[in-house]
Length: 293
Length: 102
Image (cartoon, rainbow over all chains, first blue to last red; front, side, top):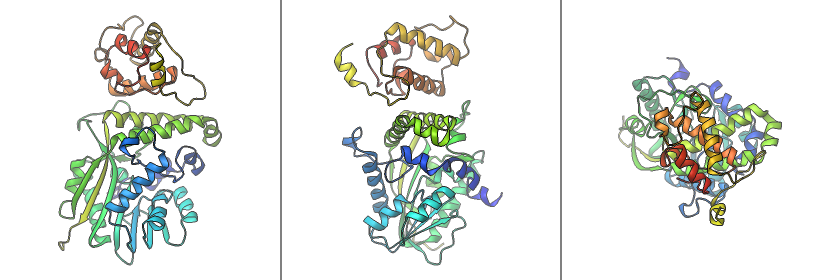
Protein backbone atom coordinates (compact mmCIF):
# COMPACT_ATOMS: atom_id res chain seq x y z
CA UNK A 1 0.00 0.00 0.00
CA UNK A 2 1.41 3.38 -0.95
CA UNK A 3 1.63 6.25 1.50
CA UNK A 4 -1.28 8.00 -0.14
CA UNK A 5 -3.42 4.87 -0.20
CA UNK A 6 -3.01 4.58 3.56
CA UNK A 7 -4.56 8.00 3.99
CA UNK A 8 -7.21 8.07 1.29
CA UNK A 9 -7.55 9.90 -2.00
CA UNK A 10 -4.47 11.40 -3.66
CA UNK A 11 -3.77 15.12 -3.83
CA UNK A 12 -4.34 14.91 -7.60
CA UNK A 13 -7.82 13.47 -7.11
CA UNK A 14 -8.72 16.14 -4.57
CA UNK A 15 -7.39 18.87 -6.85
CA UNK A 16 -9.41 17.56 -9.79
CA UNK A 17 -12.60 18.29 -7.91
CA UNK A 18 -11.72 21.34 -5.84
CA UNK A 19 -9.39 23.26 -8.15
CA UNK A 20 -11.94 24.19 -10.80
CA UNK A 21 -11.33 27.80 -9.79
CA UNK A 22 -12.09 29.90 -6.76
CA UNK A 23 -14.15 32.35 -8.84
CA UNK A 24 -16.46 29.54 -9.92
CA UNK A 25 -17.17 28.38 -6.36
CA UNK A 26 -17.70 31.98 -5.34
CA UNK A 27 -20.67 32.10 -7.74
CA UNK A 28 -22.74 29.59 -5.79
CA UNK A 29 -21.26 29.42 -2.28
CA UNK A 30 -22.29 31.88 0.42
CA UNK A 31 -20.18 34.76 1.76
CA UNK A 32 -18.26 32.47 4.12
CA UNK A 33 -17.19 30.30 1.14
CA UNK A 34 -18.19 27.11 2.90
CA UNK A 35 -18.44 24.02 0.70
CA UNK A 36 -20.07 21.64 3.18
CA UNK A 37 -23.45 21.05 4.77
CA UNK A 38 -24.91 24.01 6.68
CA UNK A 39 -27.00 23.78 9.85
CA UNK A 40 -30.38 25.46 9.51
CA UNK A 41 -32.71 26.56 12.23
CA UNK A 42 -35.33 23.78 11.94
CA UNK A 43 -38.15 26.32 12.19
CA UNK A 44 -36.66 28.39 9.36
CA UNK A 45 -35.45 25.63 7.05
CA UNK A 46 -36.97 27.13 3.89
CA UNK A 47 -36.26 30.78 4.69
CA UNK A 48 -32.93 31.09 6.47
CA UNK A 49 -30.00 32.42 4.46
CA UNK A 50 -27.20 30.01 3.65
CA UNK A 51 -24.63 32.26 5.28
CA UNK A 52 -26.54 32.31 8.56
CA UNK A 53 -26.87 28.51 8.47
CA UNK A 54 -23.17 28.06 7.69
CA UNK A 55 -22.24 30.21 10.68
CA UNK A 56 -24.53 28.14 12.92
CA UNK A 57 -22.78 25.01 11.65
CA UNK A 58 -19.32 26.43 12.48
CA UNK A 59 -20.53 27.47 15.91
CA UNK A 60 -21.80 23.94 16.53
CA UNK A 61 -18.37 22.55 15.70
CA UNK A 62 -16.63 25.15 17.85
CA UNK A 63 -18.80 24.13 20.78
CA UNK A 64 -18.70 20.36 20.29
CA UNK A 65 -14.98 20.16 19.62
CA UNK A 66 -14.36 22.12 22.81
CA UNK A 67 -12.44 24.70 20.75
CA UNK A 68 -13.95 27.81 22.34
CA UNK A 69 -11.34 29.92 24.13
CA UNK A 70 -8.47 27.49 23.58
CA UNK A 71 -4.90 28.12 22.44
CA UNK A 72 -4.49 25.73 19.50
CA UNK A 73 -7.06 24.22 17.14
CA UNK A 74 -6.51 22.05 14.07
CA UNK A 75 -8.92 22.08 11.11
CA UNK A 76 -8.46 18.98 8.93
CA UNK A 77 -9.72 19.88 5.45
CA UNK A 78 -9.97 23.61 6.07
CA UNK A 79 -11.28 24.58 2.62
CA UNK A 80 -10.99 28.31 2.00
CA UNK A 81 -10.52 28.96 5.71
CA UNK A 82 -13.99 30.22 6.67
CA UNK A 83 -14.25 27.98 9.73
CA UNK A 84 -10.83 28.98 11.05
CA UNK A 85 -11.59 32.66 10.58
CA UNK A 86 -14.73 32.29 12.67
CA UNK A 87 -12.88 30.35 15.37
CA UNK A 88 -10.30 33.11 15.89
CA UNK A 89 -12.71 36.03 15.42
CA UNK A 90 -15.78 34.77 17.30
CA UNK A 91 -14.69 31.95 19.58
CA UNK A 92 -11.50 33.21 21.22
CA UNK A 93 -9.17 30.66 19.65
CA UNK A 94 -5.61 31.99 19.79
CA UNK A 95 -4.05 29.95 17.00
CA UNK A 96 -5.68 27.94 14.24
CA UNK A 97 -3.95 25.53 11.89
CA UNK A 98 -5.66 24.40 8.70
CA UNK A 99 -4.74 21.50 6.43
CA UNK A 100 -5.84 21.19 2.81
CA UNK A 101 -4.73 19.20 -0.24
CA UNK A 102 -6.17 21.73 -2.68
CA UNK A 103 -3.67 24.27 -4.01
CA UNK A 104 -6.40 26.76 -4.93
CA UNK A 105 -7.86 26.59 -1.40
CA UNK A 106 -4.39 26.82 0.12
CA UNK A 107 -3.42 29.96 -1.83
CA UNK A 108 -6.70 31.67 -1.05
CA UNK A 109 -6.81 30.73 2.62
CA UNK A 110 -3.16 31.65 3.19
CA UNK A 111 -3.59 35.09 1.70
CA UNK A 112 -6.83 35.95 3.53
CA UNK A 113 -6.65 34.30 6.94
CA UNK A 114 -4.53 36.74 8.96
CA UNK A 115 -1.76 36.22 11.53
CA UNK A 116 -3.59 33.92 13.95
CA UNK A 117 -4.08 31.25 11.30
CA UNK A 118 -1.53 28.98 9.66
CA UNK A 119 -2.63 27.15 6.51
CA UNK A 120 -0.67 24.16 5.26
CA UNK A 121 -0.78 22.26 1.99
CA UNK A 122 -0.45 18.83 3.54
CA UNK A 123 -2.45 15.80 4.62
CA UNK A 124 -3.17 14.78 8.19
CA UNK A 125 -0.87 11.76 7.93
CA UNK A 126 2.14 14.00 7.22
CA UNK A 127 1.27 16.75 9.68
CA UNK A 128 3.82 16.76 12.54
CA UNK A 129 3.34 19.80 14.79
CA UNK A 130 5.66 20.77 17.68
CA UNK A 131 2.84 20.94 20.23
CA UNK A 132 -0.43 19.11 20.77
CA UNK A 133 -3.80 20.65 19.90
CA UNK A 134 -6.64 21.53 22.26
CA UNK A 135 -9.28 20.59 19.70
CA UNK A 136 -9.63 19.18 16.18
CA UNK A 137 -12.43 19.98 13.76
CA UNK A 138 -12.89 18.17 10.48
CA UNK A 139 -15.73 19.03 8.13
CA UNK A 140 -16.14 17.41 4.74
CA UNK A 141 -12.76 15.65 4.56
CA UNK A 142 -13.43 12.18 6.02
CA UNK A 143 -15.29 11.36 2.76
CA UNK A 144 -11.89 11.11 1.10
CA UNK A 145 -10.06 9.01 3.70
CA UNK A 146 -10.85 5.57 2.24
CA UNK A 147 -10.19 4.48 -1.32
CA UNK A 148 -12.85 3.22 -3.66
CA UNK A 149 -12.34 -0.54 -4.03
CA UNK A 150 -10.75 -0.98 -0.59
CA UNK A 151 -11.72 -4.15 1.25
CA UNK A 152 -13.69 -3.59 4.48
CA UNK A 153 -10.49 -4.33 6.45
CA UNK A 154 -8.47 -1.77 4.46
CA UNK A 155 -11.20 0.80 4.89
CA UNK A 156 -11.31 0.25 8.63
CA UNK A 157 -7.49 0.50 8.80
CA UNK A 158 -7.55 3.85 6.97
CA UNK A 159 -10.17 5.28 9.32
CA UNK A 160 -8.37 3.90 12.37
CA UNK A 161 -5.15 5.48 11.14
CA UNK A 162 -6.91 8.84 11.14
CA UNK A 163 -8.25 8.41 14.67
CA UNK A 164 -4.82 7.27 15.89
CA UNK A 165 -3.24 10.40 14.41
CA UNK A 166 -5.91 12.57 16.02
CA UNK A 167 -5.33 10.86 19.36
CA UNK A 168 -1.61 11.64 19.08
CA UNK A 169 -2.25 15.23 18.00
CA UNK A 170 -4.65 16.07 20.86
CA UNK A 171 -3.86 16.91 24.45
CA UNK A 172 -5.24 14.70 27.23
CA UNK A 173 -9.02 15.00 27.66
CA UNK A 174 -9.44 17.10 24.52
CA UNK A 175 -12.44 16.80 22.21
CA UNK A 176 -12.97 16.89 18.50
CA UNK A 177 -15.82 17.08 16.03
CA UNK A 178 -16.31 15.32 12.75
CA UNK A 179 -18.73 16.07 9.94
CA UNK A 180 -18.99 13.64 7.07
CA UNK A 181 -21.32 12.23 4.48
CA UNK A 182 -22.00 8.53 4.96
CA UNK A 183 -23.93 5.84 3.12
CA UNK A 184 -27.56 5.73 4.14
CA UNK A 185 -30.01 3.10 2.96
CA UNK A 186 -27.81 1.87 0.14
CA UNK A 187 -27.30 -1.89 0.61
CA UNK A 188 -23.68 -2.90 1.13
CA UNK A 189 -23.87 -5.30 -1.78
CA UNK A 190 -25.18 -2.72 -4.22
CA UNK A 191 -23.26 -2.15 -7.42
CA UNK A 192 -23.91 1.04 -9.31
CA UNK A 193 -24.82 1.31 -12.95
CA UNK A 194 -24.38 5.07 -12.81
CA UNK A 195 -21.17 6.05 -10.99
CA UNK A 196 -21.51 9.78 -11.68
CA UNK A 197 -21.50 10.86 -8.02
CA UNK A 198 -18.69 8.52 -7.07
CA UNK A 199 -16.52 9.68 -9.96
CA UNK A 200 -17.22 13.38 -9.72
CA UNK A 201 -17.58 14.23 -6.07
CA UNK A 202 -15.55 11.52 -4.41
CA UNK A 203 -12.76 10.67 -6.85
CA UNK A 204 -10.75 7.66 -5.65
CA UNK A 205 -12.80 7.75 -2.46
CA UNK A 206 -15.32 5.54 -0.68
CA UNK A 207 -17.84 6.83 1.83
CA UNK A 208 -18.02 5.56 5.41
CA UNK A 209 -20.90 4.00 7.26
CA UNK A 210 -21.68 5.05 10.81
CA UNK A 211 -20.76 1.61 12.13
CA UNK A 212 -17.32 1.82 10.49
CA UNK A 213 -16.60 5.16 12.15
CA UNK A 214 -17.71 3.80 15.52
CA UNK A 215 -15.52 0.74 15.17
CA UNK A 216 -12.50 2.69 13.89
CA UNK A 217 -12.40 5.04 16.89
CA UNK A 218 -12.95 2.36 19.55
CA UNK A 219 -10.63 2.79 22.57
CA UNK A 220 -9.29 6.02 21.05
CA UNK A 221 -12.34 8.25 21.32
CA UNK A 222 -15.58 8.22 23.21
CA UNK A 223 -18.52 9.21 21.02
CA UNK A 224 -20.57 11.75 22.93
CA UNK A 225 -23.05 12.82 20.27
CA UNK A 226 -24.18 11.80 16.78
CA UNK A 227 -26.56 13.81 14.62
CA UNK A 228 -27.88 12.89 11.20
CA UNK A 229 -28.74 16.12 9.39
CA UNK A 230 -29.37 14.82 5.90
CA UNK A 231 -32.31 17.20 5.31
CA UNK A 232 -29.91 20.07 5.96
CA UNK A 233 -27.64 18.84 3.17
CA UNK A 234 -30.57 18.41 0.77
CA UNK A 235 -31.41 22.05 1.42
CA UNK A 236 -27.78 23.24 1.20
CA UNK A 237 -27.23 21.52 -2.16
CA UNK A 238 -30.51 22.85 -3.49
CA UNK A 239 -29.49 26.40 -2.54
CA UNK A 240 -26.13 25.95 -4.29
CA UNK A 241 -27.91 24.58 -7.36
CA UNK A 242 -30.33 27.53 -7.47
CA UNK A 243 -27.45 29.99 -7.12
CA UNK A 244 -25.52 28.33 -9.92
CA UNK A 245 -28.59 28.27 -12.18
CA UNK A 246 -29.26 31.92 -11.53
CA UNK A 247 -25.71 32.76 -12.64
CA UNK A 248 -25.28 30.17 -15.33
CA UNK A 249 -24.00 32.61 -17.96
CA UNK A 250 -21.26 33.87 -15.65
CA UNK A 251 -20.37 30.30 -14.73
CA UNK A 252 -20.06 29.28 -18.38
CA UNK A 253 -17.87 32.32 -18.95
CA UNK A 254 -15.54 31.15 -16.18
CA UNK A 255 -15.30 27.39 -16.64
CA UNK A 256 -17.27 26.56 -19.80
CA UNK A 257 -20.60 24.86 -20.36
CA UNK A 258 -19.45 21.30 -19.75
CA UNK A 259 -18.09 21.94 -16.26
CA UNK A 260 -21.02 24.19 -15.35
CA UNK A 261 -23.57 21.56 -16.36
CA UNK A 262 -21.59 18.83 -14.63
CA UNK A 263 -21.82 20.81 -11.37
CA UNK A 264 -25.51 21.54 -11.92
CA UNK A 265 -26.20 17.84 -12.30
CA UNK A 266 -23.98 16.99 -9.37
CA UNK A 267 -25.58 19.48 -6.97
CA UNK A 268 -29.13 18.53 -7.86
CA UNK A 269 -28.48 14.77 -7.80
CA UNK A 270 -26.73 15.23 -4.50
CA UNK A 271 -29.68 17.10 -3.04
CA UNK A 272 -31.98 14.29 -4.15
CA UNK A 273 -29.70 11.65 -2.62
CA UNK A 274 -29.96 13.30 0.79
CA UNK A 275 -33.72 13.81 0.45
CA UNK A 276 -34.15 10.13 -0.28
CA UNK A 277 -31.78 8.97 2.46
CA UNK A 278 -29.30 7.27 0.12
CA UNK A 279 -26.69 9.46 1.82
CA UNK A 280 -26.78 10.76 5.37
CA UNK A 281 -24.90 13.67 6.91
CA UNK A 282 -23.24 12.85 10.20
CA UNK A 283 -22.04 15.34 12.78
CA UNK A 284 -20.20 13.56 15.55
CA UNK A 285 -18.72 14.88 18.80
CA UNK A 286 -15.84 12.84 20.21
CA UNK A 287 -13.79 12.94 23.39
CA UNK A 288 -10.21 11.70 23.43
CA UNK A 289 -9.79 8.58 25.51
CA UNK A 290 -7.59 9.29 28.52
CA UNK A 291 -6.20 5.78 28.79
CA UNK A 292 -2.53 5.61 27.82
CA UNK A 293 -2.02 3.35 24.88
CA UNK B 1 -55.48 25.48 -12.00
CA UNK B 2 -56.32 26.70 -8.54
CA UNK B 3 -54.34 29.70 -7.31
CA UNK B 4 -53.24 27.93 -4.17
CA UNK B 5 -51.50 25.32 -6.29
CA UNK B 6 -49.57 27.91 -8.27
CA UNK B 7 -48.49 29.63 -5.09
CA UNK B 8 -47.22 26.32 -3.75
CA UNK B 9 -44.75 25.95 -6.59
CA UNK B 10 -41.22 27.11 -6.16
CA UNK B 11 -39.98 28.56 -9.40
CA UNK B 12 -36.56 27.49 -10.55
CA UNK B 13 -34.08 30.12 -11.48
CA UNK B 14 -33.26 29.27 -15.03
CA UNK B 15 -31.66 30.55 -18.18
CA UNK B 16 -34.02 28.90 -20.58
CA UNK B 17 -37.30 27.70 -19.18
CA UNK B 18 -40.15 29.33 -17.35
CA UNK B 19 -42.68 27.91 -14.99
CA UNK B 20 -45.53 26.81 -17.23
CA UNK B 21 -48.76 25.01 -16.63
CA UNK B 22 -48.94 21.67 -18.38
CA UNK B 23 -51.95 19.43 -18.74
CA UNK B 24 -51.97 15.87 -17.52
CA UNK B 25 -51.94 14.61 -21.13
CA UNK B 26 -48.88 16.76 -21.97
CA UNK B 27 -47.02 15.54 -18.92
CA UNK B 28 -47.90 11.93 -19.67
CA UNK B 29 -46.68 12.24 -23.25
CA UNK B 30 -43.44 13.86 -22.12
CA UNK B 31 -42.78 11.16 -19.51
CA UNK B 32 -43.46 8.34 -21.96
CA UNK B 33 -41.01 9.78 -24.50
CA UNK B 34 -38.39 10.40 -21.79
CA UNK B 35 -38.69 6.97 -20.20
CA UNK B 36 -38.81 5.02 -23.44
CA UNK B 37 -35.50 6.63 -24.34
CA UNK B 38 -33.92 6.29 -20.88
CA UNK B 39 -35.00 2.67 -20.40
CA UNK B 40 -34.38 1.74 -24.04
CA UNK B 41 -37.93 0.56 -24.60
CA UNK B 42 -39.67 0.29 -27.93
CA UNK B 43 -42.21 3.04 -28.72
CA UNK B 44 -45.59 1.99 -27.38
CA UNK B 45 -44.14 -0.50 -24.92
CA UNK B 46 -44.68 1.72 -21.89
CA UNK B 47 -48.12 1.79 -20.28
CA UNK B 48 -49.22 4.77 -18.22
CA UNK B 49 -51.02 2.64 -15.64
CA UNK B 50 -48.17 0.19 -14.95
CA UNK B 51 -45.80 0.70 -12.04
CA UNK B 52 -42.38 2.25 -12.80
CA UNK B 53 -40.84 -0.81 -11.10
CA UNK B 54 -42.13 -3.04 -13.84
CA UNK B 55 -39.97 -1.22 -16.39
CA UNK B 56 -36.81 -1.42 -14.33
CA UNK B 57 -36.82 2.20 -13.21
CA UNK B 58 -34.12 2.20 -10.51
CA UNK B 59 -33.33 5.07 -8.16
CA UNK B 60 -30.75 6.58 -10.50
CA UNK B 61 -33.21 6.67 -13.38
CA UNK B 62 -35.91 8.01 -11.08
CA UNK B 63 -33.61 10.86 -10.05
CA UNK B 64 -32.71 11.59 -13.69
CA UNK B 65 -36.42 11.65 -14.54
CA UNK B 66 -37.12 14.17 -11.79
CA UNK B 67 -34.20 16.40 -12.87
CA UNK B 68 -35.45 16.50 -16.44
CA UNK B 69 -39.02 17.09 -15.30
CA UNK B 70 -37.89 20.00 -13.13
CA UNK B 71 -36.19 21.65 -16.08
CA UNK B 72 -39.12 21.05 -18.40
CA UNK B 73 -41.81 22.19 -15.95
CA UNK B 74 -39.66 24.90 -14.39
CA UNK B 75 -40.50 23.95 -10.81
CA UNK B 76 -38.62 22.36 -7.93
CA UNK B 77 -39.78 18.79 -7.29
CA UNK B 78 -39.25 16.35 -4.46
CA UNK B 79 -37.33 13.25 -5.55
CA UNK B 80 -39.65 10.86 -3.72
CA UNK B 81 -42.49 11.63 -6.17
CA UNK B 82 -41.97 8.49 -8.32
CA UNK B 83 -42.28 6.42 -5.13
CA UNK B 84 -45.36 8.25 -3.88
CA UNK B 85 -46.99 8.24 -7.32
CA UNK B 86 -45.58 5.07 -8.87
CA UNK B 87 -47.21 5.17 -12.33
CA UNK B 88 -47.09 7.69 -15.17
CA UNK B 89 -50.82 8.24 -14.71
CA UNK B 90 -50.63 9.05 -11.02
CA UNK B 91 -47.50 11.18 -11.27
CA UNK B 92 -48.81 13.17 -14.25
CA UNK B 93 -52.10 13.78 -12.48
CA UNK B 94 -50.31 14.97 -9.35
CA UNK B 95 -48.03 17.31 -11.30
CA UNK B 96 -50.82 18.68 -13.48
CA UNK B 97 -52.70 19.56 -10.30
CA UNK B 98 -49.70 21.64 -9.23
CA UNK B 99 -48.21 19.21 -6.71
CA UNK B 100 -44.46 19.36 -6.23
CA UNK B 101 -43.78 17.42 -3.04
CA UNK B 102 -44.46 13.78 -2.26
